[in-house]
Amino acid sequence: MTLNKIEERIPARMPHEVYERIAAAAQSVGATLNQFLVQSALDKANDILERERIITLSTRAAETLFDLIENPPDPNNNLKKAMKHRKALLCRR
Image (tube, rainbow, N blue to C red; front, side, top):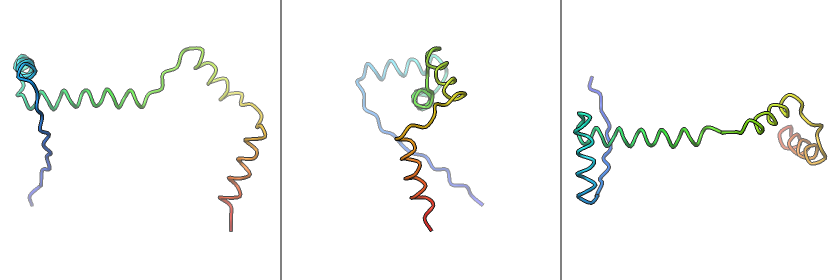
């Protein structure tokens, strides 16, 4: 049984000075240019995706949020209306 290894290619064009700088960095860490580019792109992608998934709050905002979770306010008219609408939509027979 053979396993198919799927790989994608990403062509990249860059000024010669940029190429030389990236090649020098790759060499300095003992990686091939391809390894260096893939790892660098993956590190950057992980950083960006992690930033998108994490919500950062100030201490005051966090305290407000936790207080609202522990002591939720009474439902206002808009929430009551929305819950009736939800019930009508989801509880049809």
